[in-house]
Length: 363
Length: 214
Picture 1 (cartoon, each protein chain N blue to C red):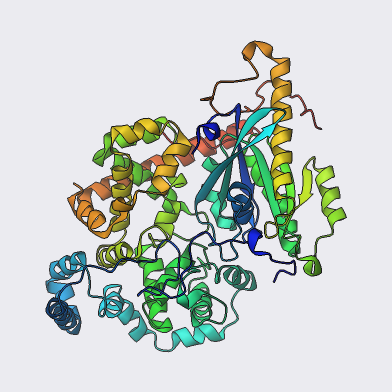
Picture 2 (cartoon, rainbow over the protein chains, first blue to last red):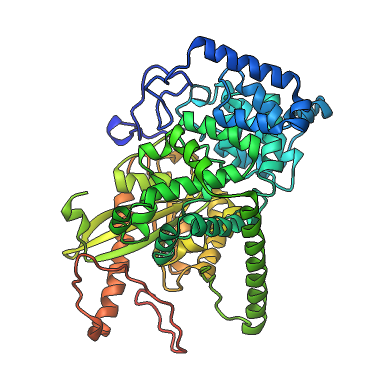
């Protein structure tokens, strides 16, 4: 803790902080929601809850024979009261927990890699700092966040701990008790975002190329604008993808997106990204004012409020003309391109000896 | 943004690098917005902000870039360094390990950044007097031996933050000015308001000239 005198004029918070939390637990920050959500009627909510509870009680039947019903209901949005349980089932975490009774507690008993533990400690207080669960070290949120991240780093030592995982774990802890959150987290990190967090971060580099390819297909003028100003995807998409949008979207939108993400996988993150990029830069007038890299990045990293509203994102996501095949085509194309690049790099490094080698931008 | 803010004589890109948790993001927010956040989120991906200062009557627009300090992120930060003319290499004076890793960050710069990039070593969190584990003299000597500028700062109480950025931007400006004096046909020192960023390209000829400050 700092020993210097801390006068108020040298320390300020970046947002207004309220004295009471909103209904989701936020005292401040951009994910705090002041306006009340348009309510469904009580009867409608109860009806939807009943449908979900019935579906959860018959989960394996729905998954094997009527997955489309699950997917469509997820796209409509899961009722708040049922959401934690629904996510637990959607992610397959309920199977992991059943298969691994007491493993979480055993993992917590182990010491873990000291370097990794140190890294986790540095970050446990830096997630959702305006949320009631994570306000300070004594709050159960930070304690359980540390526990979940530590347990995972031992469970999957190939990953250990990547900083981008922390907001995802924190987000899940806002919805689920620690052990259940842990197993959803395992599923997200090892299945939905498989290999994303391994040192070398190869997967997101591949996905950056895929995103560019899909953008070229869905919104050519925007694609050309980004190419012209050398706005590489890794300059704006890194935290979107690595954090699964948990730091990017307003709260209600984020919940809706995660309903879809857990039902349909990483494709949903791509679609959200394409909607944000497309909507932010689709107007010629906006592209004209973005005369360079920084102006363009600023627009992408702080999209207009209406662009990240839940109905806008969800509706436009559905409207994108993309099939599963399109993702596969781009994946194959990008894989081939990366293989070619690596071959070239190896040829250069063996041929040029001590020559200065700079990473060339992919075009 | 006001009209005055948009007009500048030079645009310099400066990158902030260093281990996770040393205070890079708060140095950025303190310099560009005069804000310090005790509860700042960890940086994942790339952040940037700008601010203009005056040097010798010229308006310098500083474009400061900030990114994740965790080691595995180095795999995806090559674009981050493109066009950077300055780097603030930040360590935490209360955590010796962050100072030990400075060598690695210097290697990172050698691999990805322009070889002529101006580097300043910054010991942040100077307010943590009782927790100091990196003696000032030791770091200062290391900086001298490696041809780096050196300063200690506190983003929390604002100590030397203004000075650090002013110093590196001034140093960059001096180098760019000297280049222009030596190569006058390339154009006026004073440039129009919509000037492109100065790109100090690597020396490709066999004649590798030393930086003026070395």
